[in-house]
Length: 148
Length: 148
Length: 148
Image (tube, rainbow over all chains, first blue to last red; front, side, top):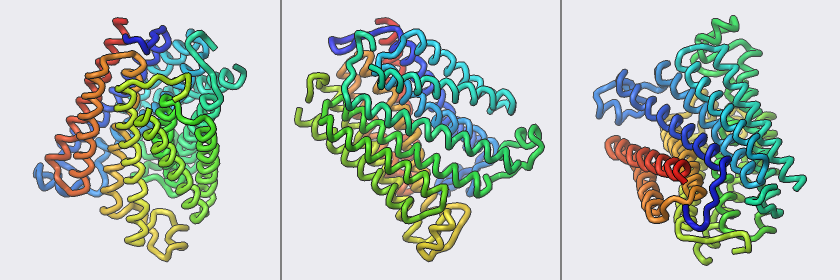
């Protein structure tokens, strides 16, 4: 902690949430590469030549599924990170921000679990929960920006 | 507004811009899922089984078009959000930042409208306007970081 | 520099790093569009009609390769930007943050060079270096958030 920083609970909780979810997305990204290596099918011709595998134009289902979970994570994480950063900068309610962050982490953990294990109902519900958490947090931040 | 926050016009305008554009992207993401449900073609086998539809390897054109508009939004929004956050942190001109934010929102609304309605010239011009707004804002922020 | 901003070395270095990498990603995005125009194959039917080219369902290898380099950039840049922003807000070590930023920029420049020139070993090593820089920076930021 240096002279420029002020720690307060929401920064800690929101910070840990986005760091954890960022690392989770990073691991899913690495898992697509690892799965390509395991099944020896590569979308880059030079990888197939180098690692003695097959060059394919489209990823196999196993790789594409992890890739879809990864992409869905990133699409939502970008908007959650933006909403949370503006929420923090606007100085909106700490307790509500902590609750939003907690629900969002749970929603996205369930989403990844549901995607990788093929549970469509849970996946849809987890996605929907995350969607509404972001929407409520963004509207909350916008209201605080406008009225203050 | 708590003791840690300082509201000033550029934070409000830039904040509202990225919150609005983040929600717009979120809605496009949900629209791809809704369109898959409407035409009953799914890229996950478990969704096709659950919702009594067809399992396809590639999204249909209707879904893929919304998906491309969504992806283009996110690709640009990430760089705009980064440029704007550094611009704010650097303390660069408020009035220029407000103008950049306004042009960017208009550019991206036009881009989505042009993509979904199949107007290629307007789509290219809107994309190009957004591209240059980000580039100018990023260079402006970099100059302020370096000279101050 | 206005009354709200405080410049210090890590903000300058991290800010320049993400501005530069954001612009690099933006240029790769524009390069996919330019390459589609050069080889006259378009994934939007209206573009093919407008620019007198062929409508294809999947991008050609030349376009798809730049697209993969672009997407890999954005996937990693989002998590790096989040990790760095939280690292800055937490007030973690300036000198370590500057070193992380430097290594990350080098890693991602090498990754793009390796992807576009078809060097798989260098590409994997550059990706892995960037991956570990983000992971270390994120864990470092999380530790500072928790212990302070």
